[in-house]
Amino acid sequence: MYLQKKIHLTSAVLATGVMSFAGVLIETAMNVTFPTLIEEFSLSTSLVQWITTIYLLMISIVVPLSTYLHKNFSIRTLFLVSNMAFLAGLFTDFIAPNFAILLLGRLLQGIATGIALPLMFHIILTYAPLNQRGTMMGLGTLTTSIAPAIGPTYGGILTSALSWHYIFIFLVPVLLLSLSLGLYAIPEKKVIKTGRLDLLSLLGLVLLFSGSLIFLSLLGEPLSWLALLIGVCGAGLFYLRTLHLDHPLLKLTVFKNKAFSLFLFSFLVYQFLLLGISFVLPNFIQIVQGQSAFVAGLAMLPGATIGAVLSPISGKILDQAGPKKPILIGLMLAIIGWSALLIFLGISPLWGLIAGHVFYMIGLGLSYSNLMTTGMNSLPPELQNDGNAIFNTLQQFSGAIATSLVAVVINFFQAHSAKTYQAATITGSQVALGILLFLLLISLAGCFYQFSKRDASF
Image (cartoon, rainbow, N blue to C red; front, side):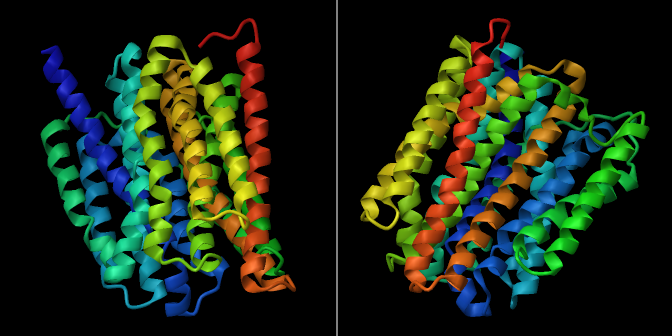
């Protein structure tokens, strides 16, 4: 009976994880197509990044609904809806004749992934024994972290050999595998509906996330300040509704837990770095070094593969030895690797960039999933769903911010520098990576302080 339960749990995690994997794979696979899309649709660098941003925006809006969805719909129903929406998004993008239709397909994929991501972690937090949680979280994170390992290569091969359209259709078998696993492992259980959806809270989130991202994409233009005002109003509306509701969309009281807030911040910094480098490096290799989309994708493969393989191993280390060593050692290695990337941009051949990326990903592999596990373990059981929703919401939103931020920084130097287009791209990339390095240093300092506290217990 124990073995059967474990097999079903692992299969259920893999079913939702494979779907999340497909979402992240497309996200990073599309990054290597940006130069192609810029030329095909006559787009700017800041506009083309909406291929990623609209996807992450939809996830950011849908994920906060996860607590409500889990209280009103069965896991099986949510899984099937997510899978069908994803398939619809894939077919839409495969036939997309223009940029607007392409964005529509990405929107559908974002909705699907927004349901699937928290569903995977909800299954782990609800059904996995505490002494196996680190390993299961590592397994869940593996399915999403291995996607960046092959995403750029996958996208580069298909863009070079066929067309970017085929990036989507070749994922249909992956979604069908996820569907088969889910139908086998996720039973239909009746749910007693206990949650209510507050539409004003949802409106606040939509205004907050949309306004913030539009502000970043239009930074420097007059309309950007209107977008910022909309975002601020959305934040105010959401906060006020949270104060006055007995069952808010998200319980912001989780932020009173200092350990949770710290590990959440460090986790989000990593997400900034993951999405930032997935944008910077493939475009840098193509624009500055003149390599093909295939080579740009292939350059990401060694580091991201190592980071993905280390994810479940680091979870096992946490289960056996605690979180302090893997998190602190991982952060320090990530800082060394990221610093090397910053230095090597513009002065090193391709192998130097690959080496810096590999070193950074070793550090990320040791600490990334453990930051989420440790943060969630610091919460009482009644706040686990809210903590899970906040982690996944801000993970995607921070990824969207990172993509917008680095795109805006690079686009600024490309448009306003007296240097050549290639030289301006180098400068913009270095400035973007420098900003992210500063956040990583703050993250290390915060984690070191938290673990050095005498009363810290994890």
